[in-house]
Image (cartoon, rainbow, N blue to C red; front, side):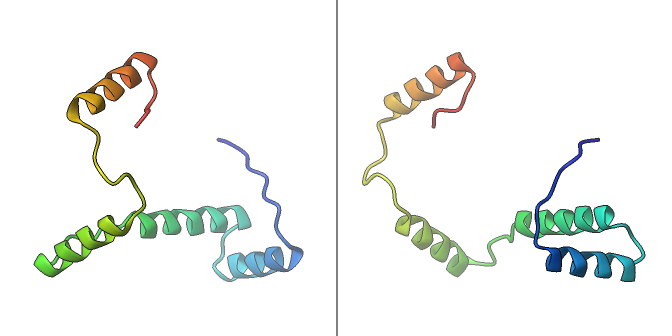
Amino acid sequence: MARVQLVIPDEDRDRYVHQARREGVTLSSWIRTAAQQRLRQQQRVSPFEGSADLKKFFKECDALDGPAEEPDWEVQVAVMNESRRRGAAGT
């Protein structure tokens, strides 16, 4: 098991310890649980409920910064093949 050193203000540490004790767990266990809950929350993916959600999704994608045009397919294939040869993602 890995050991992680965490630098936080004393006031935060005191609040975390207090809450961990209220829940009957160690500070380490409390922090791990909080981190796991945060990951689960962030990884939740909501399915599209209908066409309005889908349209909203594509509108948000269009608003993202990026190239005005997609590269030609041959260029994409060359980038993927080079990445495979190097063993790292270049896209």
